[in-house]
Image (cartoon, rainbow, N blue to C red; front, top):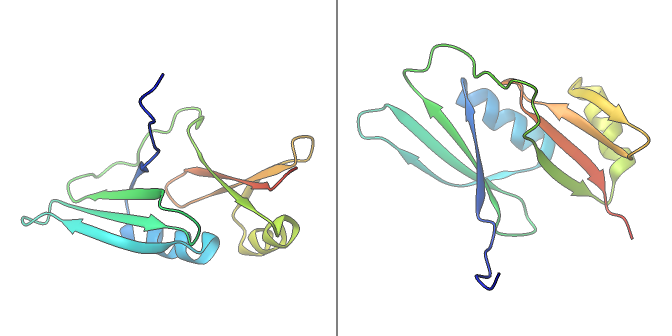
Amino acid sequence: MDFDFKMVHMNINTMDLEKADKFYRENLGLKEARRKEAEDGSYIIVYYTDSNNDFEMEITWLRDRKEPYDLEDNEIHLCFRTEKYDEALAFHREQGVVVLENENMGVYFIEDHDGYWIEIAPYRD
């Protein structure tokens, strides 16, 4: 395939944009890159980035959504790598957001308030 595709963003939805903003800023150090708000107030889309690249995570809030999103078996997830894996794991344990530690694979997962899982992995050679 010669299209030279580049990953741009991944979208997740949230029931509470304020909680999502706090979670992703405090637990993963993401920063808001930009946002789009519907003139009628029906939605807000916020794009977050890390300090290392231009890949963005898009979080969408829909005003009229009343029920939590059904994440089924939760097989869709984001993955972040860190050179300070052990320190990050200790921090996330203190925050109470670790939902699964897979020592055999050397990764763990944290969960946001909407039920999305985020994989945390170390850099490996």
